[in-house]
Image (cartoon, rainbow, N blue to C red):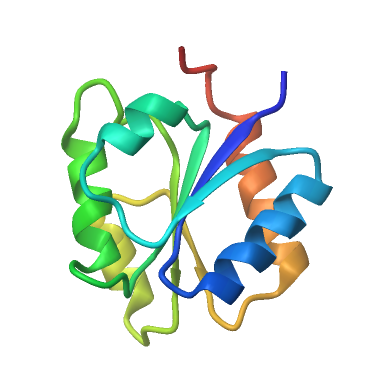
Length: 124
């Protein structure tokens, strides 16, 4: 069974690139420009979520915080993708598991995804 990664990114080119990279590494991906609610997570059941800090209607860290405050979703690792200078502070505030600074190094992103997924129990 392939591990699943949800990609929340409003830039379609970045969404497609990240999906391609992760699928090439053997992951199943689902991407969306912005989440309407937590339902997309409950339907796709990802093992990890990548969230852009700058999504259209809400900051990505607010969506991350909703995930981390949800009893049935808070064990899913979240990585914030961002160009923000204060990304470390954002990650701490929203309880994300890690971050990848944009423009990102492909190998660094893949390594962080693999490390967090390998250390996460299977979510059903």
